[in-house]
Length: 168
Figure 1 (cartoon, rainbow, N blue to C red):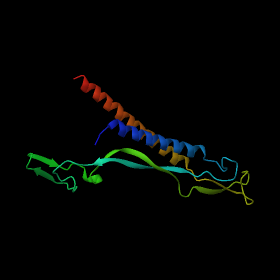
Figure 2: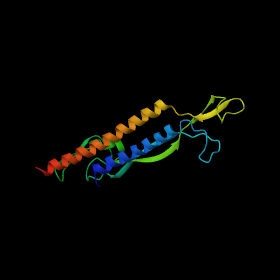
Figure 3: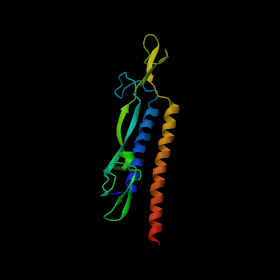
Figure 4: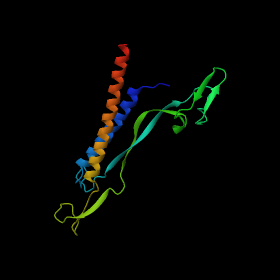
């Protein structure tokens, strides 16, 4: 098992960058009613799903980690008290970061508006447009940007701590 905070922070930054890129694509296509080849077809809003990366099962010898019990246990062979500290939350697995699980098309991706002057309007004056809310997209963009910054700050702080430790 390896614990590398730079890999974890980097995976978070990569995942948030994909989310920012997806949101930027949604915003750029907010009024798109045609496909890239020129055929009629509404742009479908996309969203990102993340997944935790699990490194390895916890293997700490004669302890209660495998049972995910919150109790401490005494090991008579070594004289140590083994305590299960927050391992039960993910069934004995250690997190190793995050990755993009999928980029999927959102539900209710199309809305119909009345605009008889639009070139893609039907004979009754209605046109299908992407159901993208600019406010929701901007909130998502700010949230992803802040999460990216937080991961960058973690990496920078760990680097500073390592440099300080080497100067001792």
